[in-house]
Length: 98
Image 1 (cartoon, rainbow, N blue to C red):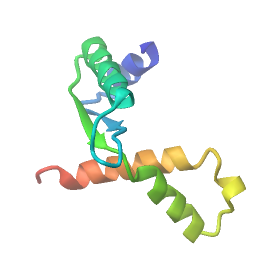
Image 2: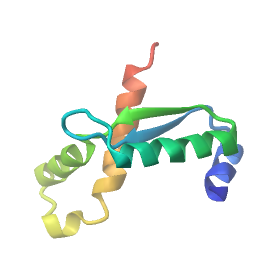
Image 3: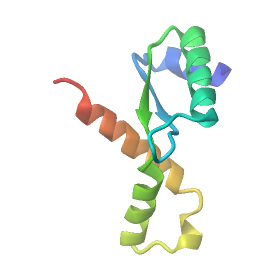
Image 4: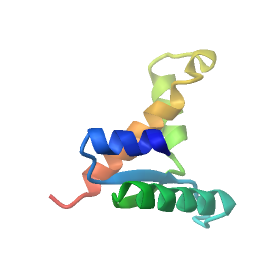
């Protein structure tokens, strides 16, 4: 939490976006509740607004992108999560009002 607060302060962060792990049915389970609790702690610690974005398909889309790029499944380890995070951020940016 200290590192997040430091990044927010030094980079003049105005909004935090967190992926919300929902079930495929769209139902929020325990993972989503833990994510929301974490987001609330981040908001309280940093004073910055937190927004949640459905992340159900982000990892699968990242895997598909790596597959399409010819990256073997073995070499995909460690690459999926950063790509999925960038896809979430891109989706959030595209949905923002202009």
